Length: 254
Image (cartoon, rainbow, N blue to C red; front, side, top):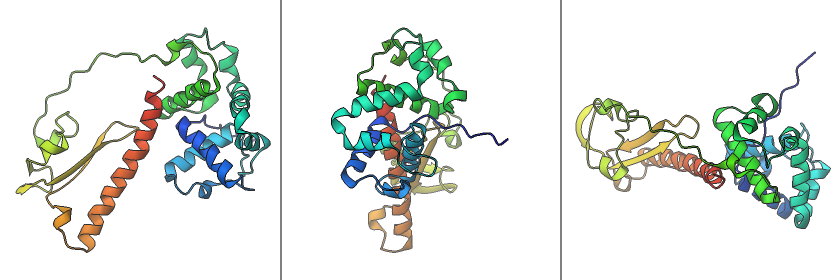
């Protein structure tokens, strides 16, 4: 017998989920809902939205909208009550434990990977969605569940040359890096000065990625070089915007 693939608990930012419902309210619920219905969202956000709708039973595995979605979209006045009923059904084991009395460790045990198919950073985002939904629907829960746990700082290893720049905490702020020469950091040891630098932190791994150049894009003539640099810059901006939206949603719950 083929094993049914476990559905993943919603991990899209809760504010984005509400925006999705409002988008459907404005444009109408289609016969079949797929990613193409959300052209203004990034591909990653589109996938998160579809996954959330499927887990909550708002669409079936073919993308056909269910009655619960129609009610959430059309009846905004009673949306909170409809959503709470869905949460009670889809997170049954959590509510059965009494969220006003459950301890943080017990909650983590109940919010299991087996039941909700979430791991690592996705698990953190799924928790953020859940508590965002509880706040929105006015559902009581122990505030201990969303308190930030302080962990001792780890001592950073000393930087050992420019090659360890990204992993050793020696990454400079953009304003500082732009004043320094790139000795081995960009294309070998040379006398070129870094004139432009952009740094982002990857959302899942926490690793740092940076984009640097000794060229001032404003001085480049129109052509392939200039278009290539601008395209890379746009990719960095898009990734950073999506990551910031998720971080803001999580931070608002802590």
